[in-house]
Length: 306
Length: 264
Image 1 (cartoon, each protein chain N blue to C red):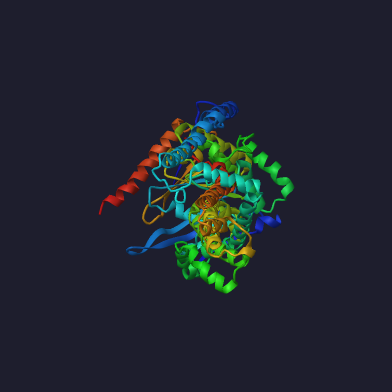
Image 2 (image 1 turned 60 degrees about the horizontal axis):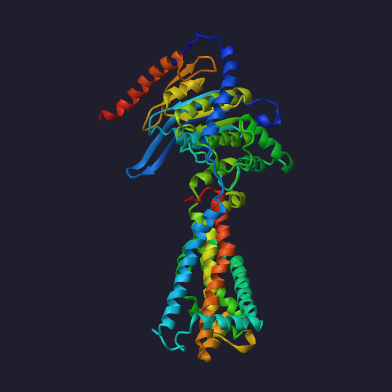
């Protein structure tokens, strides 16, 4: 073993320590100021131009083409293609009769309630699949396979098992949404950087504490993506169930409205129903799930601006 | 027999531990493509209370593996490691949790250590003050610069109130100016807190700049090749002549170790 004992004789060490103390704080403050990223919010005008204008233009364009098809009699059979104004009239009529909100509420309340059930089942299921090897090997592949099964396939067995009632609707929603939610959580957990787990362990977060403080928050982006997809699947499953299993006692939701329109050969009503299904599905996503996802990503610096 | 024990001696206050970490005849091998591969071979090393030791070595010397063993993240294949309490660990990447603010990252460490809720906030602010980041409490990780992130990570490690701080090349990814500043900070904090530090690096000057003792590991398998006691008084500068002279000597030795691997 060699040992070196050299002393710096250029300056007394005490002096230097005092001088360095002040220098260092200043230097550090300078570095911090230079290297920190300043982020401001985008002005409202820019948001309007970049985010609101393009989809508005697209919708107006579709309406214009639609109106042209009717006006120039390219499709001159109102029972095949009603004019936009006819659909508007039907919409207005159901609004004036006080039925429009009823249709929407029947479906939305079913959809959201079913989604909440799916959340309660899908979350622990996903956690179990993600964390327990045996469970993953046993049902992991089935769970991801179920995602590609069109949920409309569940309607006939659900009707036979449960009859024509609300529980049958919820069963179909669950079978459609639970796999998405569970799979989202599984992929979220799989993508947790191992570094976070190691850091957590050195801080003393092991076992359940580790799951609660490290794994779950780290998996949140994947989980929220799963929720978003879960909602889309809930809504689709519900519409399939409402169209196929329409029964007067169940109350008229958007799916039944569509089916009623078909039975009455009222194309304007069919269009009204399709538009409402589309708009409500998008609205729930825009009002609940997209803001949730943006908040999660932004707070972690994962949302790239531009 | 392989053991990892944690001494509880200091907790009852009767008798302070004679060392912060004791590594005795530790070997570690991993299953590789060519059978069992020996990564660490019979390492024996003590870190005294309050001592600053750097582990220096080229790639493949197993210095990070050794640090993981001391941290208790992995078990040795042979030999024993004992530490005075659970050590804190700092990584090359800041490893701060992006879903928490800087302050909450520190508070999580306090919470997991069992500090009551009412005290956490004050304690976190105090630790941020120690790394000169007053006012960064509510900042998100992505809003901080690389140097600031490592300082928050240091504050989080200090929040564990361990007697031993393990550092795995924590400044390797920083630019030179920031690294110099963090060397000064680390030296200041080490002297204020009287922590024991085991610091892993492949940067010879950094090792000499910081440590009281530099331990050179050979590569494949890692063995203790040589040790130097650094007598240059703190605070040092990385550009000091004495630091440079010793660095030249150690670098020669390190190059010799590396050259041996090209000779077959």
